[in-house]
Image 1 (cartoon, rainbow, N blue to C red):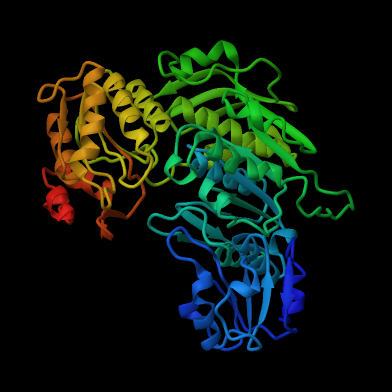
Image 2 (image 1 turned 90 degrees about the horizontal axis):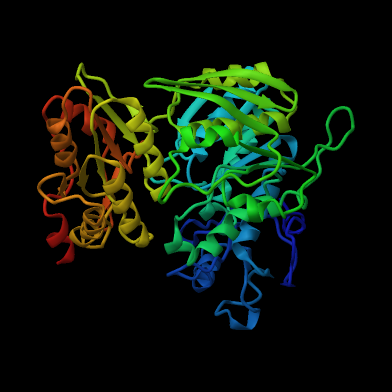
Length: 541
């Protein structure tokens, strides 16, 4: 593709030196540049891509896109064309979209964001589209579905980088899809990984305390999420077969504080969902540290007559076009909210109530999301991805509703991530669980002992006593085994924080790890022991 055609896709070009060129490929990694490539120089947290322009040119790059003024670059002028832009990450997204001929413009594109529940809601929307007979694709942090093919999307992945996002969308178009659903993370939005994606529907689950290590403040995190909604009305306007423009729709959660600022962002249409006020107390367990009370005003999509069973949830779903009874194997009050969000997307796409109900019933669960592990034991064993204070609270509330016995929780907090969470999660576990075991969850290069200590102190402030109903066990496999050994008939053991993930990070190394396999081993009286044994001291050396 000619360079001139590629850079025509960029929102802003500040300057350009040099002529046109035929581009073989686009790369943001100077080590992978080949003759004829366009190199995108992206400033990173620890490494600035502008430092590698000379290397990229030496490898054959014929053009470079970057942010710095040309006179600041130590590069052999005359050997390449330089295009200066205000944001190289955003430019990378648009260039990748142009390279694939803007596949999102050939699809009705749904984006799902939020702190918790994104993956479940994304999969629910996909199942609703399937129930409607729509050829759809999906990309979540757990899996990607394109046509009849399903594949994993990685170990610790969030929203993929622009080349992968656009490749997935292009493959969906090639497979004949008309709709696509993307799970969109705050990192993906802040780092412009979905630049070049023209969304038609944006949905939010909730926005609570998370990723402050990366965003710096709760406000910055909220603004990152808001980018999805601010981009709606600026996105490419698609034409339906009848000629009417596809509207840009925001699906908002009235039960969450995010409604306060997201509802002020313009959209062609806003669809508001929430649990009917008279039913919220029975579903959310509101109290100290509880969720934000429902804000006054209309709800286009709501739930009433909510009933929880150990293996299912049922309720009446109220929609603008009528009401329908919902039966889902998903458990917990938070999954009622996830279903409402997905139903809101169904309303945005003009799908009838019975189709939405069929789609919800068809989704049997997601790996590592309140996943029950069965080995003939007389207690309930669950693996869940809950790794935020809000998600842990909701998971423990759901676990409490499942059984008449005790709730035994195993959890940790990640190193080099939001440090405030460690104390907050300790408070939640100490308040809501009967027995608490604090353990490892991706300590990275931080001291595991120090991470665990912060959660333990918080749990003791909630009345827990070490050695009586609170323990710290550095080895996660041993922690899960100990929880299962403590369990009696009618109890529930829930391991939180890892869910579907297939690795755990110690130092700079990702070691193979699977909580579900660890739970299976524990139920047989064994441990899954593939991690470093001297967690804290060894890493600190």
